Length: 212
Image 1 (cartoon, rainbow, N blue to C red):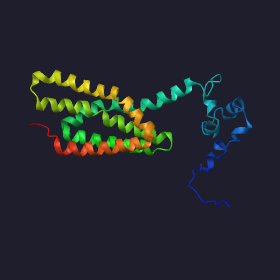
Image 2 (cartoon, rainbow, N blue to C red; image 1 turned 135 degrees about the vertical axis):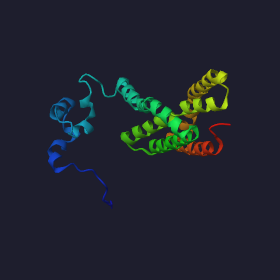
Image 3 (tube, rainbow, N blue to C red; image 1 turned 45 degrees about the horizontal axis):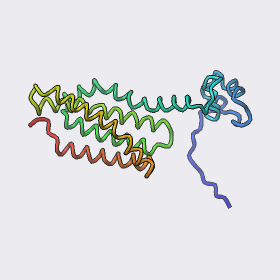
């Protein structure tokens, strides 16, 4: 005998019920659903028949659609990475590189945990935003450390080596990451990465000093 248990659900405001409610997805075709939802962004048909938001001639199963979705998902990392560059410089001047790098590691860990545990797109995108913003502090903080730990004549060399190591890590991480994901699944790998970031943040706080 089946057991029915109560569960949490989202209910629209009474004033929006008529706009949100929609016919079952399998009783209308795409063109009918598109006509019914026209001018009504709250219609549940935008969820149950999501293809109505694509151009009429688009195959919802085509590689182009999936590539666009992946591109939008990936871009969230770079949005926050880009926006953090100026605030990172200000924070580096006020906090110093030790606090900034520690905070960046911990925020990246939180973003990775959120991404790994996400069951829908919004929290996954938020996780990517946190990861990108946290990663955005690394380069500027390392340049700040370079000015304190090395003579001025080595600044360009240290900058180049830092950038080289960062890009080399990004390029070389693909094959081992793919192996780990295929062996253990992407969620366990992300949880392990979050744990590593927490350890890294603790190590930075304990070891890094702003100047000799």
